[in-house]
Image (cartoon, rainbow, N blue to C red; front, side, top):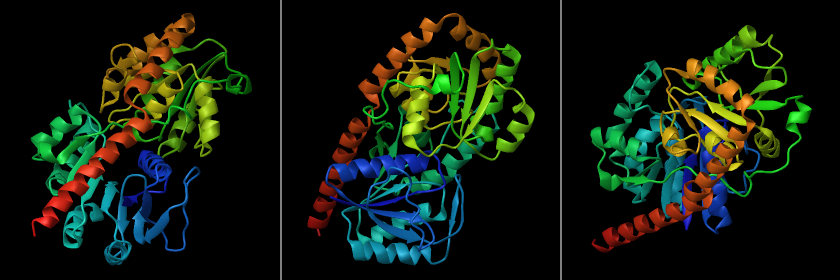
Length: 383
């Protein structure tokens, strides 16, 4: 099958990881992938780990981890490329761009089945400004999503939101994120020796307001953790400078920055005792699944689908309103009872193997593609 994939190659974010992992897995299974992404036409922009696929560069005026503004030429290049490539279907990994709203019309004109993955984070309880802002994003997108042939989301909670906004059940497919459980697996690591840590806690992700990292840092400062306990912050973002200015003098906080080398990230995860994700909004965090797959005990807020992922003992769920106070209780607990992390880590790994492997994700995706192709054949035959 030939899939025209519209996604992101940069800058680094969950959408980039999702596009890379899914398209590489599709290539491994013998499918053909044409990867369309916003880039300068001479810009390769291949991320570490990406396999070879036919790339189509769509020019842009502005691009960030949050949204992209295409140039006026992007529409024409996209349409011309789809006409030339003649894919079996188009799969868009939506990343907040005006082009997202044009795709249903473009694909209808070209008679191409169209599926979207809708990544936007959410908190169904709308407890803060970030979750209210994301609710507005859902309201803006819903009328357009109803025009896609299929919309992939990650959980029943997300489906409930879209249903209320008018996206019919027949257009929605729940396919949770998946992680390569062979690559992301428990194993030996020297990272604690390297970082001089007896107990290692880790946050991995963007340093942005919606990730609520400062709530974690406040808890760490209040706890006055014993010597030998280290908190590693892996990632960068708009709050990097401010957070480092305020908390950078603490030698127990290690600022690792963005790490593009996957083997290095896996080594860090394998050596981590506790992974912490204090977000105010999420979709379904790939970083969380990667940590769980490596057998790491995880603490995460009950936003997006993350609470569903670690429920019933596969992790510890935080109230996003009480992150600092709850972490002040939990962080010392893991130091005093190291066996707790091991028990939760085993359950976390098992949960991934049961529900959230990349193989299961691709199996479901192939079934969806086949169904869309069958429906397209029936529709064309009717004429």
